[in-house]
Length: 271
Length: 272
Image (tube, rainbow over all chains, first blue to last red; front, side, top):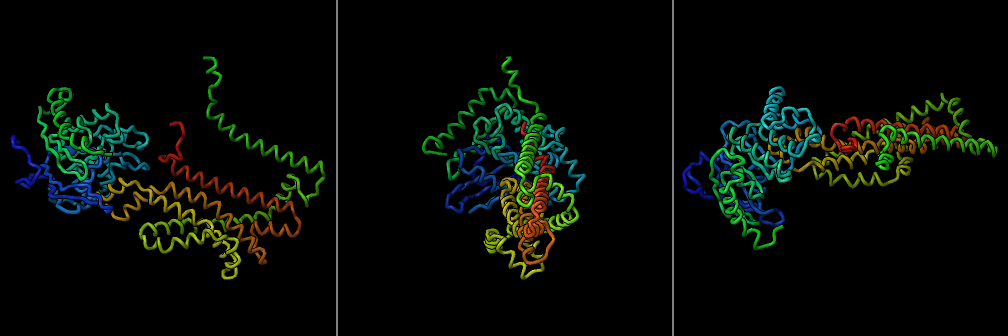
């Protein structure tokens, strides 16, 4: 990690990249251009946040990376490990809502990706239990989603994303609907998981404070069609904790990120 | 404080008892009034039979009536099973292919909106009688199953569908693990409506068939008793039909509750 600024354009050393987007645009059927052109390179093991106003195409970018939709133009490339048995295995996705199946238990929800991939039941159950333990929900495996609080449901969703041991974790405003206290706890737990598991995380949020607290890089996007406004590296003493959240450096970064975001909300009406 | 204590809500057990006891008391009072009016005014049984006479007729004619009840219930069951399987299967087909849906759905609606009482005589000409009666029950009952299942299959959470796509789920897996469970509450709702409707369809067809000369269902008994001015037996048969409808509804509601009680809002207690 040199002090050289990571450019948003094409980088050398493609092998070290987890995700690279080049000239990617997305235009919907109704003619609205939601995204781009967007150039973004994410290194393996990096934790980056996509920050921007509502409707700027952050979620669209995630869906493109997850191959849930196809770009209108440009190239999306993922640096996956070799020998991935099933498509999608290299990616874990956490949606804004917990998106759990209400009709089955927490363990079965977490086991779903393995079940779809045809992993043997005993093995899959064991792995689901490990994933649940990693988010602190080992005791709730047999509960139904409705019996859990909002924060716990989000943890189940995170465990489900982790159960396939993906290289890349995509998170689409996962904690937006939670209260601040729960959100702080989940932020800390997510950072601890990221440190221990070493996954590449792409985290979409519209909270300046959350993005600065969590990520190594904050990518600020413009209003629709979303392009990159600024790419700010957050450098601090790791591991981060509550002292970082209250430090002068933290508020300084927040000020810089907010300033980069300002053109998106000062000039035009964004709903 | 004291005022608050006096308005303490009754325990849920007591409330449930009241909900059960009140309609029963209304029923008993109604029967009593009916019995008294008939006895005091000395109304002859062929005009209006007293409840006691209807009850005695039910016992006296049980051999005939129970046989007819069995026949009607069997028709209803056959129509219901056919409607359930047909409705769900057609909805699945519609869900797989828009072309099939666009081609066939209008005809399903036409079948639904044409009064079955008008179709029944035609069916009796072209089909064997028992088959015609079952087909009538099917026609009346299948549409709610079809439309509810279609609604359920289209109500799958968009993000969950995306999740299945992300993990490369096959169409069969998506159907089995996502679409069918998500549609289950809707399907069960459709079946609850279809249960009552298949009884109606069976009765309508039996009446149509009865006038054609044969048949042994409860509806035929009602028609036949009417011609013979055997009014107490008409009431007895009507009572059995009504009871059959209540039991069908109760059984389907119970099944729905048992299947959904673990997770669906409709089957959960109101306290949380």
